[in-house]
Length: 365
Image 1 (cartoon, rainbow, N blue to C red):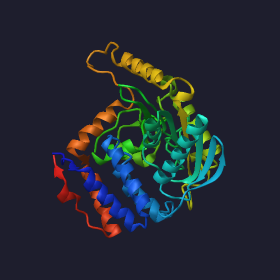
Image 2 (cartoon, one colour):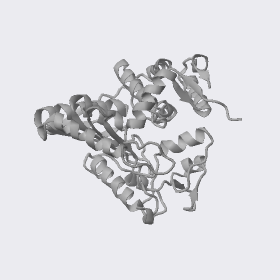
Image 3 (cartoon, helix red, strand yellow):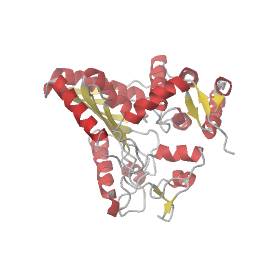
């Protein structure tokens, strides 16, 4: 019988993350920001990019990729654009600074675009595109990665990272539109989640070392041979390949950061991850009256959801809607942690020299 998950309240989980980050020498403001974003990610049901990343962050911290006390700084600022040197800080802090700057520029000029280099993994891309929503703006958030995990169409060696794309747009009565997707068929973190639960993955997500499809999540996570979004050429995989390359152009080449194919040539990053990000903000009111835009957004989203359903399906969703509903549910019921992740977090706590009390604070169900 499969062991049930440990369900933990967000406050208890946040306190645990803060304790670990403090032991790593993270400034209190950065630790709180990072912990809050990790918890928000888990609340939204994106379990691959929340507290589940903490064991990986430990590895990167020990390897010297993450400098907890790093202070991101703006190194170029020219009207509607800016460039941020992440100083190897937590990507959450780098991305928040850059998106805040994008929003400020859009408020002044109508649009704002900011690139970042020398950064780290920033969690879920939607955390930053959504920052534009309270300002009645459209937000854009892209990131690349230095570790190859995706094969190009017709290739058999991973040359690209999963390179996610997020765009958030405000609406009126409907939930905002929040797209957050990897440009691979599946995000690498989804393999980690499946492996934690010992679940098979759908055929077409990943390949084994011989280039054949595999349903073994642990094997796929090890080989890191993901297919581009769409899968094979016949299924449109070349489109996902093109989107992934687009992200590397904006986040790597334009930003002056590394990209996965470059890392492949160098046999992996040596002293820093040098992840690149690209952020944008668009002030809706500079293009159309805000209330008209929101009314049209409502009409668009409602038309999609009210369109005829396929057999066996009672509902059509739009991007972001499942996450909004999951967040409301998990705020009431708690965040489920897979048994494998609980064991990993216990190891993180032991290495940091902090008590691990999630087992007593959570419940199995």
